Length: 204
Picture 1 (tube, helix red, strand yellow):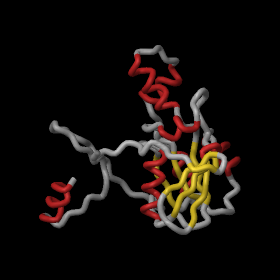
Picture 2: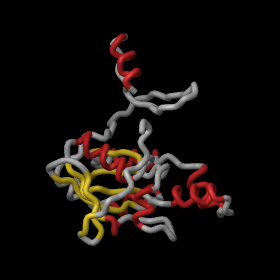
Picture 3: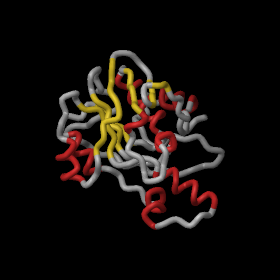
C-alpha cells in the first residue's frame, strides 16, 4: 500500500477506491466508475443517528464453512456465498429516505462498522442481541461473517419507515444500534461488552 501511495504522489493522482489487496502474484482487476445524484458515503453519520442493517447476517459465513469441509449445502445457503446479490435497490431506497452514511458488510460487521465510525467521526454502539441472523447462526458468528453484502446504514433518530422499506424491497431492515459523540465501535450483548473477531484486513 505504501508503494501505491508513493506512485500516486509522483503523478499527482488519488486513490478513490476499488479492490485494494496485497498479493504475491500479478492480478488484473476491473473497476466500474459511475455517478450518483445523491451519493451516501461512509462519512456522514451523526450523533443520535440509528444504526440499521438490511437482510440477515451469517449465511455467507455458514456457507463458506460448509464448502471448506465438503458438506452438502442446500441451494439457498450455497448461493448466499457463491452468488451474492448487491443491494442496489435497497441502497437507492435508503438514500432517498434520509440515509446519512452507508457501507456494505463484506469484511465482517466489526470491521465495516469501524470504517463507518472512523469516516464519520462518531462512536458506533451495536447491540449484538438485535442482529438479524441467518437460521441456525449465532449472533457472534453472524457478526463475524464476511462477504455478506448487506448494507450497514445510519438513519436519523426519527426514522420510522422500516415497514415501507420491507414492502419496497422484500428485505428486512433492523435497527441494531446507534451513533454518539466519540470514536470507535462498541459491541454489547445484553449490556455486557463483547469482543468480536476483527474481520478481514486486506493488508494484514
